[in-house]
Length: 120
Image 1 (tube, rainbow, N blue to C red):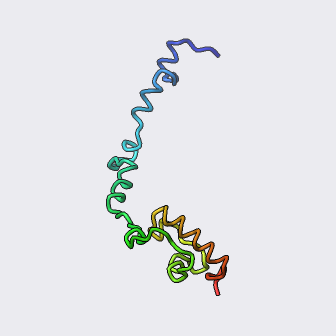
Image 2 (tube, rainbow, N blue to C red; image 1 turned 45 degrees about the vertical axis):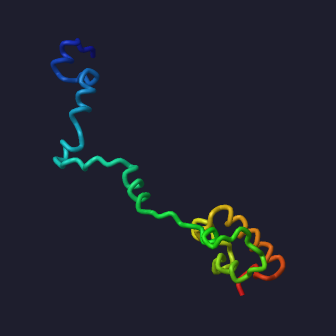
Image 3 (cartoon, rainbow, N blue to C red; image 1 turned 90 degrees about the vertical axis):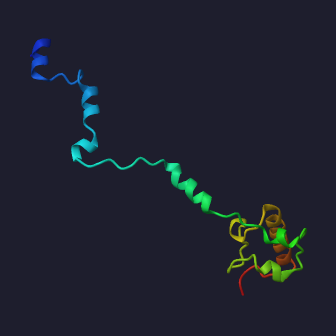
């Protein structure tokens, strides 16, 4: 069966001619009758949270410690977790320079048996 172009226009079977118009007209807000949510940027919440944060100051920098000695076992114990894992600098608040020195001192103290490798 072949249809002429006039018959297609009259019957409304032409899907290609009105395709762009149909997509623009059928929005979710019109079909449901609800008002759209206010547009928010995805970075808006991130920027707001970032303003409220405070910068942690390194306790070792404030004390003026230039070097961390492996013999100071009591100081090193403060930077170990419950299972004797070394705290990361984000949790402990150390600067990267002191965190590296701290990790090296803890490893040396473990090797000399001033600190245990595993919890007691």
